[in-house]
Length: 283
Image 1 (cartoon, helix red, strand yellow):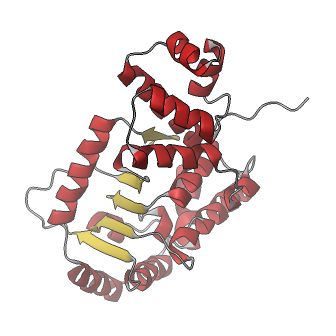
Image 2 (tube, helix red, strand yellow; image 1 turned 120 degrees about the vertical axis):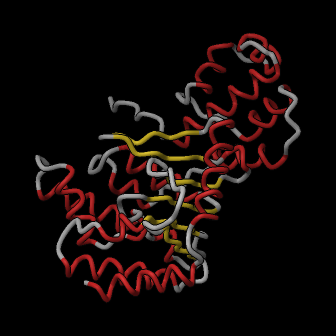
């Protein structure tokens, strides 16, 4: 018998939001189950993402929980009823689950934002840059595994290259632009790739220069994915050998505020392109 697959980050997020709605309503799982005409085990399974939920049942749950936010309900319905298999499913078992969760998250995002201090954002990386980065950080990993990771990262660019691209803002510190994870040729190619993407109307690249006074955001790297409504936004933060998915409302507010602060501190898109042009000439 096949082993049941672990729930994805998207499925876990749906479960978390339904539990939050129940908690906000002041109902126990047993009370919610009685109102729905089911047993409490079914509520627990839905809230643990071990069982799916139909649109009809989800809307009944929202009504019982007193949620009248149609935007939020619609976003949850979309998460619950989407049965499409994205390109990342072809890589299941070939790359880490967190890679797949990030690809799924940004595929459904209304917009994407990145802040990077030491590395080029994944969506903007060249194959040469990604290969050098993965190889350095994971020195014991085989070449075949590194290549699978690189190709998976390249396929993530679909969201900014497709016919209906996702709006994208990348804030990159000068340190990330100057650090050579490979050689001079690869560095030049990487900067050229960023410049090429920055010309697209749906992509904004902004640079934080070294000579900015009062910059205390060295630990501010983040990936921000906009949900159907702000309550469904997600922040992804990298940690050694693991990525953390953050969806607490207070924390999301803090990250939004931080992003806007960093955006205000960065160079304009036009000055940022000039800045990167200058760095390219130095190589």
